[in-house]
Image (cartoon, rainbow, N blue to C red; front, side, top):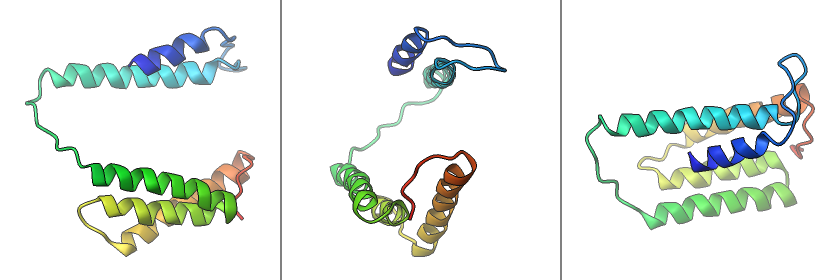
Length: 128
């Protein structure tokens, strides 16, 4: 909630504009507002749900961090599609079950999203 408030207050320094003609502060204000609502809902819900001790597995944290770093390196030196595949197959090693078929489906979905962002929104992504 503190991060949402920080970005939300920073976004208010920029012109918000209107819905028909959004200013540069509109998107960060909307995203930080949604994050703030999620944070408030989480805090309120925590008062009504029984507390559960969550174990901390450093091995899983290292796997996730290594897959994110590997994604960046593979995307930079090969391409982003290979980076997405690396990220999915490496990060699922931190889970309780491993399914290569599920990883293929997740990779295909993420690649489809990246292609949609590149072709429909015109983002400059190094996919190929």
